[in-house]
Length: 440
Image (cartoon, rainbow, N blue to C red):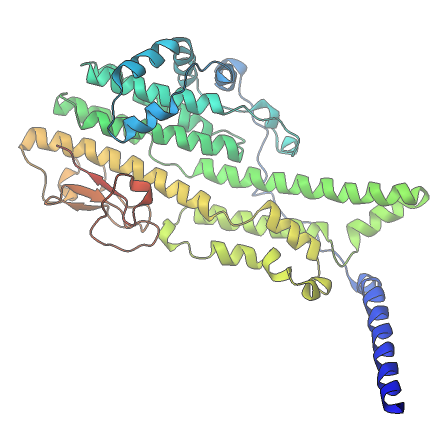
């Protein structure tokens, strides 16, 4: 009985001791913790955007918010798969004549900038961005109009329409201060333009010289990484603003309970605190942003760190409660994981867009070459310099785009970086080796 009582007492004492430790550890840790200095982020902070209203396509694209009539998505998807619904397409083009005119006006403006975020300090969660549904819909209808014109013998006009789609897409991506939704819609719209161009080149009767000249215009839409780099810088400013808002929210919340100690609370939160260190959290965000900017120059198949490296600095290492309890800046690391997160998908989106662009230019060059030589070249290097200014490169591994004259395909090694000799299927996005047929 005494032995049982002794064990019971030890258990009780242990539980009490554990409770005391759990209760007092945070206070003890706070005594010895100290936030780091603010990061030197001069390389990450964007300048205020100055775009005259008359040259800003934002105000034109805003008019598309409620200006689209009919349902174009099914018609667009069917057209991508080769199913052409002539009468319905003719009708939806006619219904959206005004919207298409607005889209064309926007294409001829020099820049796009959302005035809600024309300086870094304005990139806040409550900022209201451009409604984007109408822009994508207008891009799809412009795609249908371009193919309709090409099918009715107006190929030159159709290719002008392709250029307008590409211009709007690039404007959204190349905003002086971009945000993720507008950037990604810009990428989607630009992809729509290249998809239209590929279908037009498959049916074109235009002469070789015109195709070569048009291809030079397509080269002006070669992927520039500057827009994506600005996006990561803009996202960094958004994270910093979020951290400042959260810090201020904590100060306000605690000050309501102890208003006489507001200044002391503010100093303690900003300078000391084991579980949340605002400056250390900003350092995490700055390092993540710099890594993403650096990787915009890398082939996507070589970017192996994203899912692991970024998250190793964020929430996956502090998910366990026990570790969270003794992890410095645990809240900051959790916050960094939520605000930043792995951005592998953005890099893959970038490489898919580059692949679509380079494959489109290659198809135009191959078409022009065949018109001149009555046959396809043995290798893509034979297209340079008359038909292409440079050898087409695969954005996924940085090597030359793959080509098979026998199979009549051009293809990429894709995200996995493996050359399987091309893939088959109806949607190149889903292929292990994204593959484009040469339909002429």
